[in-house]
Image 1 (cartoon, rainbow, N blue to C red):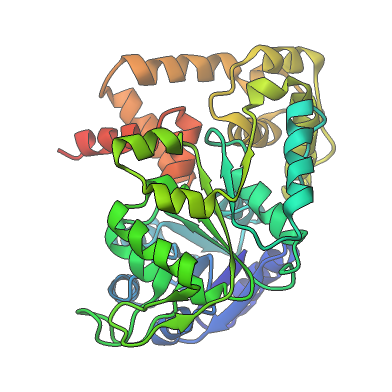
Image 2: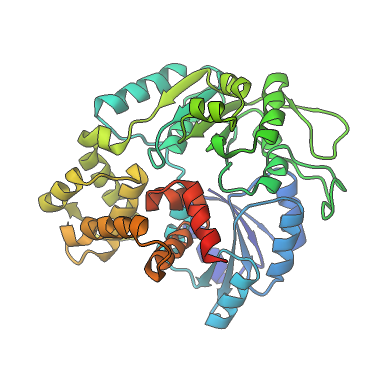
Length: 420
């Protein structure tokens, strides 16, 4: 996690910085919004921007939008009123973080935005086969395509491959192609020159240049528009990119890992994905099994997440009861490992005893919600559930769709229905 903080140093924000660093975040602090935008344009990169609520958040968000920067913004403030928080969110902040900081809230925000861990847990044969293949090809520079259902751990696997590659001491940069609007994605990837379009007041370094020397993850690449796929194909073939509005190509040296939860062969047949790009990316294909295929790993994963979130939240040791495990072993897990992690994170927080019980994991209730989601239509309960899930994921549509057990297209259709 790379954290950019815009504001003045005081004891409260210093405490928040200490908490962030204790969770392995890399923190940079600047004094003004203009300095923050300049920092992001230079390609130094941040996964999250924290900005003091007293700054002009609306202008910051507009400036970032003008430069095609999609990094999430969270406002923070000391002893602020609910009105201040609402105003910050209306101004474009994704969330509001009250100070003095609550360690649990910071942990939840970090968990929703990213997971820097490269631990891969599993003893089932399908998972062991996938790990063995990743180990075998990690040291090469070959492009890798990782496929599998949403929530199976494709981003974690990508980070794992990078950590075992010869580029491990360089940057690992991830771009979620499904979460970034089409009109922003080109600039996000390739950058732009000053004056390339209205609002481009300075040069912006894109993710290709930022990750040069390291690894670039193109997450959910199947969601990329076919027109942009052509430019991506050229960048991969020629190992050079053209900034939007640029006059000369820029050489880059990076390894590309792409992921998809779709059958790209079928997308090629439909005309949604370029076959030549597919062959450039699919030098090595690693398919990740669904959680249903790796039932042996459920208990291992559950214990890992319980330990992780008790530690993150400063709680005493907890263990999973046999009755709760029995329910988990027969549940379908449509959201795969990501859903399992969310269930255990919630269970750790709400359980009243050292043992996590079936009522804490609440799987039967989740089955009812999933059924209601698919059957009721645009009911108030469904709308509330959708918006609450998107809020929990801080706007990450891909993660929200996975948790809800639907495709990102269905989720977008639902949102369009709600806003009509």
